[in-house]
Image 1 (cartoon, helix red, strand yellow):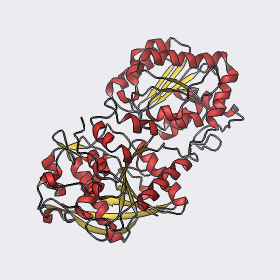
Image 2 (image 1 turned 90 degrees about the vertical axis):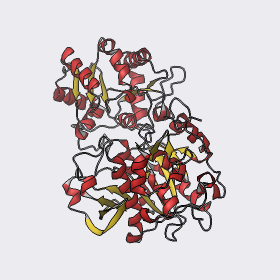
Image 3 (image 1 turned 45 degrees about the vertical axis):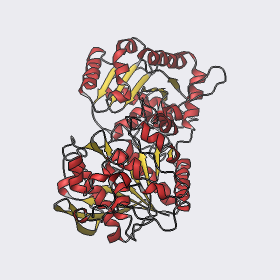
Image 4 (image 1 turned 30 degrees about the vertical axis):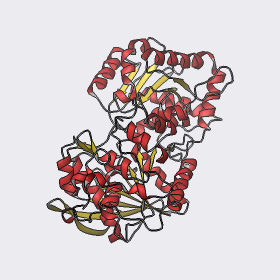
Length: 528
């Protein structure tokens, strides 16, 4: 198969979160199975020069955005069997940040979506599947269906849209989005692109893609409820037949305690002596009291309410009343920076906080800590808990999303489990579970070592998940119509020349209705 990934970030080139890890790890796995996999990402100024030096300029052209024509260059680089295309425009992506404050994000990523589609004909690459990731790529399925699908080159291309975090949707003013993408009023109705009076890039992907996936089975179920659905639960319930959850994996070569070059000592599930050395070195590096018998609890996270840090705030004094040390690594909200800065001063030698993104330090923390605390309010998948298991650091997590799918609380009755969990979003439930974990650390060494061994020998690779994606792709292609019909209100690829549909808006129907073996999404407002 020919597969194109479109995403706003991808390791090792640029990363702000788990989206980059997923795209960067999944693409090479699919390529290793014999498929032609290519990835398109913006060419940010933050991409390290070592990769820029290896890029080859393959083409450049102009893209029409409303009344403007903008330069677009395509740079290419091959790595691990995958061809990476970088969309170049210094005005949009040559900035000091990856994501801004929303002022012109609609224009930056509207440009990116248009560039991805326009570049395909010039690259002479016609993918069987376009797999778009998160809201920054959400307009690609919509534009493909509305403005490109009637063109022979694009007819029949199938689309998958993956939700990495439903909370971030790309919500902007309708006139602004119309102005750059040339979409008529008939597409800004509650069954298409309009959402509570705004244009919504995430909704564009949900409505117009052939299949929708999320990054864990539990999250796929949760987002169909009002509590987790971020006002999209009605739409997601309407499309539940085309919604599935595929659990993320991690790069088991990068996160390998037996061969990790970023940690001071190596160790295995059978020989944990190196982990003790990692703990000693970590305590020394971060200025903690040198005590091999005190458990080290780690938090590596974006500092936000989503990650459950308000629970930690509520019981920080009770946590520190236990015989433990706490390490925090991450960036985010000022109130949590202040919280852990205060804790570091209040408990010298017992708390260490570092407010930055530091990949080498994160490896050393995973390797040297004893417990990993992740009490998320919601968690689409989460990679940190799987990485911590890989290093024999037992997770204490809340049962939500991917955390529920990967961490099973230790059961005293039958001995099953690989960590410690709690269900209610409650600070004292979290505190009780942490104390339970400490009990096993101090008083049940045999069980503790059993859980470490079980965690380190678990399968967290992309192998199984990649097969699930390939199965989904094959099913889509097998069920595809012989000749994909054009959208009734088809528009040309040049926005300003887009014809006005002859039908009234109420009579315009999404193309999804015409697919055999697929039901048309119901026209519902998200709150329905």
